[in-house]
Image 1 (cartoon, helix red, strand yellow):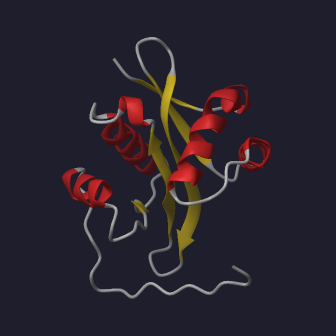
Image 2 (cartoon, rainbow, N blue to C red; image 1 turned 90 degrees about the horizontal axis):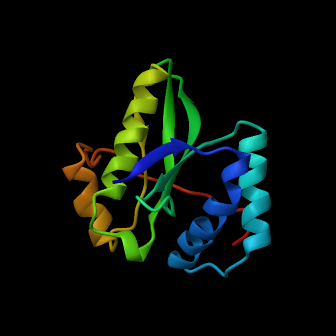
Length: 150
């Protein structure tokens, strides 16, 4: 059984190791102190919403983080699904799908247009999961990015 709940500052000690593992997955150096500070700031300032997945033993095994945005052309809120991670020991149990379903519920509850995400073309698991979860690959837009420093 998997329980999904909205994370609060009290949950940081459980989310931070998952967030750090997520960053390592994407080639970043481990930094638990910076991860805790970053997530604490997001939650304190209401700049993101984090949901945490816990297994039957109440162990945190995954999380999803969404940031609020707005579409001027649609004149509606949108959510950016920026982070989704499930611990390797808990994969293939439908946890990522449950976290995505929670993002759908958030989108509906906030009367938003929906949510979007970006993932690498080499993320084969994600690129299989997202369409299976009802998401559509946008082939009509170009994605551009500008870095101040990299």
